[in-house]
Length: 215
Ligand code: SF4
Image (tube, rainbow, N blue to C red; front, top):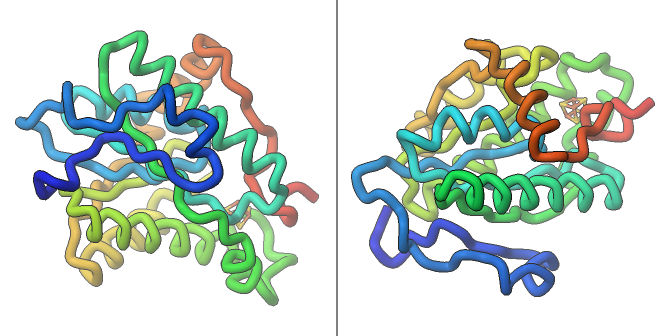
């Protein structure tokens, strides 16, 4: 990353004012020997074991871009839970995981899903949903000059790793930024995410995110 963009925590959107006092806006504490990764996260609980696994080797900034969470109250709850985990994790470990909130443009998701409302979970609507979120993360990572972009989505046993991997690698080639291709559910990653969510007292939802999955 370029020197002037090496912020490890950037709070954006309407959340900014509420928690600005608690954020870290400098690169103090970042390990210059580590590569940087912009980690798309679908929610706090899924991010737990991924962040734990990557934080020894990477300077991580979480990118919360999830316009697929169509209920705004649920969106805010998941976003706040994400921040809650990062703050508690940083406090407990001395790490400096950062956070960026992407735009909450749920109409983009709904337009993208048009005609696929009745698709089963794991079908074509979900493939489009993965691509939408990964593309935005890759573009943001490229723009902010991160070394890699990645996603927590592969920690879920309900998400198809091969599809996500193909999307990530194709976008990496198109956008000219490295995609960190890892199946985070391996080595008991999902089980560990449940353990850590309990340990940190995190809200854990029981549906994927969009109104179609809620049904
Ligand atoms: S079920 Fe989940 S992955 Fe599929 S479209 Fe809805 S929010 Fe996206």
